[in-house]
Image (cartoon, rainbow, N blue to C red; front, side):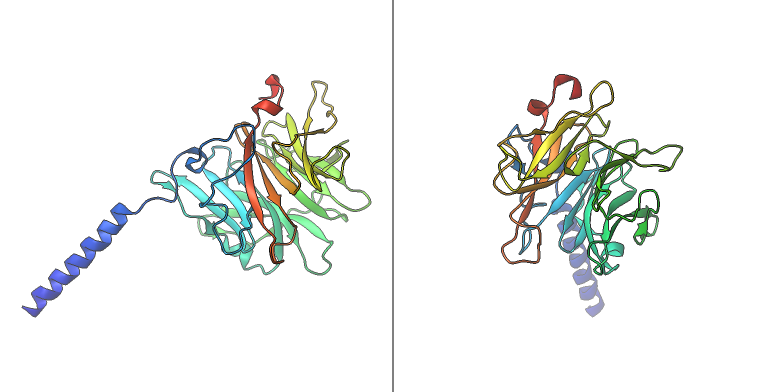
Length: 300
């Protein structure tokens, strides 16, 4: 009798666990984490799912893979990944190999195939020495951060980067030889870098390299300390002058970290009241906005 009771209790527990699994809702469902697309005025991305979910809300640098099924972003604890499965989007997962590195990291950018994350890897001493690193996805998880080496690394600090659909990397460098650079992906590698005649920082390039959005500070007619500006690649291969994206995107706060969605429909960026998430009261949110109103028809 006692054994029968134990069997019944065990069966009830298993049924209960099974029922919980069947009734549990996925993290999110649908393209772009199931969010209603924004219009031409910037909106917080995935509130309650990605943004404003912690005790100290601070999320930044959201980027999608080429197929739109992987999303990577940054919180003060490190870089997080969520992926779209047949059951819906998975809960954001911390990339442990980067967290365990023990050094500060900044500005993740997901590769088109979602198998690499590129970012600035900043040593604490000296704080000004920064390089572009990456982690690769393997069958056993994500690798430890690895430097990309020359020509992507240089004596000048590499501050941010973003990646085109063909794996070309656009880099912001500081120092005396700084500026915006392009490292074209040729013959399965990056063998050279090209300095672009572009003023601004934090370049976010379109998947087809037809335009980019950059952040720039304290310009006449601007809206805040840092504003986002649009730069077009012209038919002759040159780049247009930066154009401020206006008050529906820019604000009195700091706008930075632009990323273009894989379908070129949306701009993702960060809006913050400060740079250092460790300081009390500093907040950062990921925003998104439809680009149709801001791009000439041939660039959409």
